[in-house]
Length: 259
Ligand code: NAD
View 1: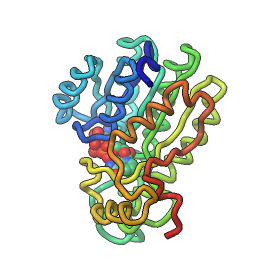
View 2: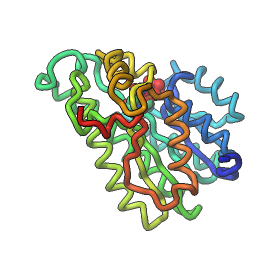
View 3: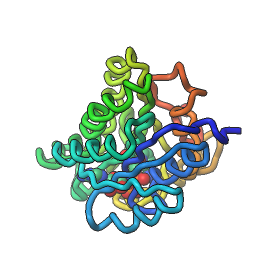
View 4: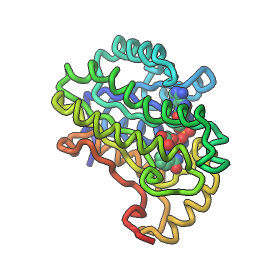
């Protein structure tokens, strides 16, 4: 049904580490709908695996981008501008907090861990949006999507400072949507239920999070990365042409529950 819905669209997917990454599921969904894809990867360690995955969806536009560095972000978007000539879609699927911030009490979060989590997991969306805007606006608009988690709204034991970063990210989405709206650039977030990825391995009690979804969510089963890919496809396609500044839950309905 969505075949060809993104024909002629240029999409950047940021945050593929391996085939389990949510970003990779998004890439596959966008590719399936006809988009031409470009990728950024975090560092030399990931280049090979991202290039190999990119090849399978017909892409050789694969550029380094470490979001902790303004220079790296600017260089990446310079290259993307030259290689693609514009951009219609930005999928931001990036987060990081130092491992120790998931272990102890939230109250003990160090200044360093706090700043790092907010920098990599929330500010990076603002910085990438700023670099993407001049590539999208001349094409008459575009769509940006990022990944969040419901711990931004309610206390989830051990999610700690990453929850604060996600709250900052969701708030940033609303401000970006407001400011980029006149250029017809839409900005949304997907609040995903637990998915077994590299990043998820670092979260203590992840098994329990999955068990709670099975036991208490309306749909009584856990989501898969592909479910997030499909939601991202919707948000980045003309089907969502009047949807911006929102958080879409892909969590088996768990957010609707009181207990
Ligand atoms: P993942 O480990 O596959 O992806 C995380 C990505 O962040 C990696 O590609 C990594 O390279 C990138 N990254 C980290 N620091 C970076 C930096 N300095 N510069 C550039 N890139 C950097 O894990 P994932 O679960 O696919 O995570 C993707 C997004 O989904 C994250 O925002 C995560 O918080 C969010 N999310 C995940 C779940 C889940 O259960 N897996 C649930 C809700 C939201």
